[in-house]
Amino acid sequence: MINQPETSLIQLEIEGSVAHIILARPDKYNALNVQMITELIEIFSWTAQNSVGVTGKLVADDGTPFLRVLTLSGQGKHFCAGADINMMRDAGANTPEENRTDSERLDSLFNGLWSHPCFTIGMIQGVALGGGAGLIACLDHVSCKSDAKIALSEGKLGILPAVIGPYVYRRVGSANFRRHAMLAGRMDATEALRIGMVDAVDNTLDISKVITEVLSTGPSAVTAAKELTLGFDRWGSDDESLRLWTLDFTSRMRGSDEGQEGLTSFLEKRSANWKPEE
Figure 1 (spheres, rainbow, N blue to C red):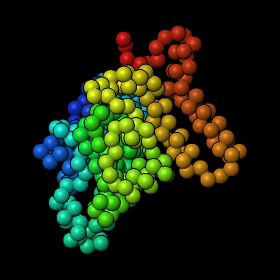
Figure 2: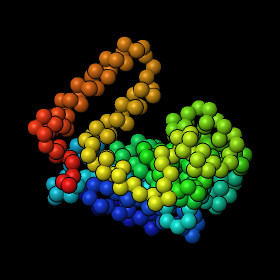
Figure 3: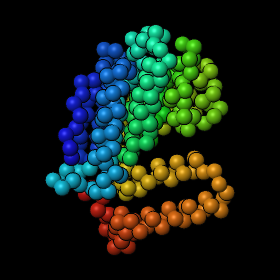
Figure 4: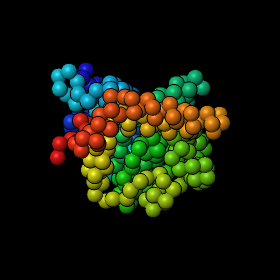
């Protein structure tokens, strides 16, 4: 692997094929400022480039495992309180061009997480407001504590959750997105679980079983599942074309090295080469 980026507001810890990303600005409730956003974009890019889904390899030439799982958490009392107050103050004084640049930076942040080739897991405590809710919506699996509060809070400032909107919309659906974008209030863990904003409520935030399950699954299949889902989301042709596309997709996966290893290991009653030794 190439050297990981140097950061001061984000911590990156590598544990085998799992990357732990930690928001490390607890004194500001991990609020997103330009530096933190830039560092997250760099970390998401670096971990993606060093993933099995991109390299197609389980290990690097030096034997270092390529990444298969990414976790995201925040230090301190709160996961992420949204945009830093100075960023919001600057936005009011910025030119339209400057605000456009800021929006493009945010878009790179959320798309980098949403499209990440690894299986992504979030551990949420305290509040996740605005951009913090956007990060949650981009994750593949989210566990939160029972006292967590999540809000699409932009409406309280007279703006809307437009940049994070596509990701929240995909996660919770049209009616729930519209209602919470209009209310802009804080939903509790029960409501977040009900509408699918989170996947589990657990005060221990123990995600070990999820990681174990992911590591037993073909890593390229995990990445390809995101491609398959996106194809369904964007499909604009007829059902017959969709069926033919899925046939091509299945044939490609079965003919891949990973697909051959999975089918062969099943027939030989042995563990596939991507499954950790127990």
